[in-house]
Length: 79
Image (tube, rainbow, N blue to C red; front, top):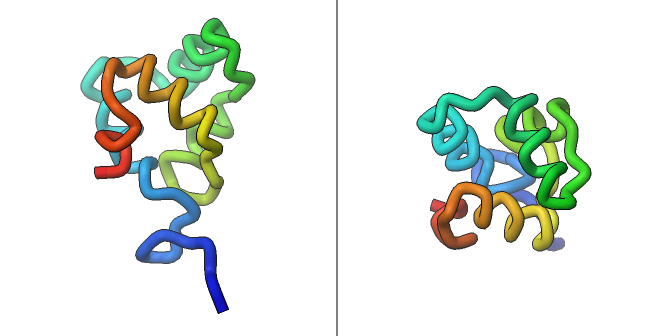
């Protein structure tokens, strides 16, 4: 049976990279959520925390918007 989980049981493969890029830019989870909301993505601080910890799925639209915010490709977020 197919299980929709990344290695290690996480629900996404981009969380670690999102956390890394966010910290490199010196922005808080709340700050990132606010910036993404300005781009039309309705995510709160808790959603960012869940993405980074791997306890939340990330949709294609969310992944695209996050990548655009950080100025990278969606593939970069999956590294």
